[in-house]
Amino acid sequence: MKTNKLSFINLLPPRGEVGRGAIWLFLELVVISVVAWVVIDPAVVNLYYRSLPMMYDADQLLHAKTKPKTDADESVINMTEERQMQFLRQLESMEGVESAYIYNRNGTVIGENSPSYHTVSNEKDTIWITEVCFASNARFFETYGLRPMPGSPSAEELSKIMKKGKPDKAVLTRKAALTLFGTDDVVGRHFQHYGQPDTGRPMEWIDATVMGVVEDFRLSLARDIRTIIFFPYTNFLTDADVVIRLKKGIHPGRFVEEHGQELISKGDTEFCRISKLMTFKDYIKQSELREGNTQEVNRSLMLALFFLVNLSLAIIGTVWLQAKRRTEECGVRRAFGATRPRLLLGFLSEGALMATVAVIIGCIIYLNYAYSGLEYNEGSNITHFGLEHFETMYNTSHYENPTDQTWPDHFWPHFLIVSGIVYLIILCTVLIGTAIPAIKIINTKITDAIREE
Image 1 (cartoon, helix red, strand yellow):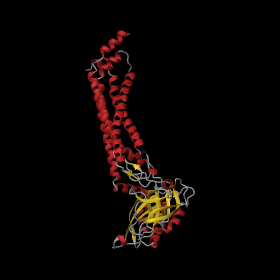
Image 2 (cartoon, rainbow, N blue to C red):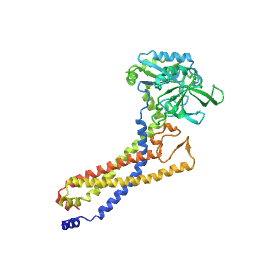
Image 3 (spheres, rainbow, N blue to C red):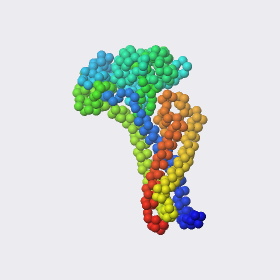
Image 4 (tube, rainbow, N blue to C red):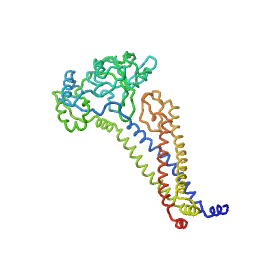
């Protein structure tokens, strides 16, 4: 047995060239791990946000754009409340339409990624909360399908309560209630906010009452803002947008195709007309495109895809060359009784070990770079409403409250999750790249394998 073992060792091919190849492959994997972090991070974060549900009933909604029927300047044309109600009644009279809501673009609107913030005080702290202003004389809550929390008035009741359009009443999302009061049972509780008591008056602190709380929802696809406060307004511009809720069971896309012209004719009045009609989901997509979010997401995904394809080709090519250099070694091992499954397992184990160590080193290198960016921000006192923002890791947040934060907004969860994804991608690529040539090599005839140079 001892003689055989020594003979086996003596028969092995020189390992200098194979060893140098393994070192180069290992260094290549370390560099790829660092690059993979930079490329894959934006794609992972963007895909994560787009996988989250909107959390309100957007499936039954249409979006319409109106234009005034006049030659005067659109910015000074007012739609009276009577005209607005007439316009909405005409739309709601059409078969299949359940309700409609008309609004002007004053600040943040649902479906767009352009948040504005409002200063709110709970007598202990002063915080900023994302503000949504809604037309107080329209059916805002029921049209969007926002769901009131238990103990809060229904959507229809909230629309009636908020109809006067005064800044002394507000509605909160559940996360806004938790941020402001520490509980979601806040109907009837009082707070202060910094705003205008009436048009034309200077800004001041206003006492306000919480009239209702609705379940959390997302304003847009690009972020996870859910800490929202609703205030009413009474500005009636003729150039407005309309959200239309269809009755349950009606498909919005088919409705636009089959009854779109009829709905447009219903919205044709003596003072305005519908100029554009689409499903609300298409409206969200257009908003994302207009704000540049779609281009950014597509760019990150295409870059990640391009990187993965080239990563696969590079690793498979390098591993193939490295494995082919070991053809003679495999032939010798098989001649001494090594089985094909055992040889394949050996190849895969070596590849997995090399990939694991390389990714760990690559992630440590990137960690040093990313954490140095975080320390720089902290040292420069760069904070955004209590949040620490690091420039070296991809993030779409800017001024969100702590209740809006998810794992991309926290350094260590962000780093560990993306590192795990990078590891799985590189590990799978290395294993596939190793298995393809390894299977071919171990199936080569022993005599042919030993003669391989």
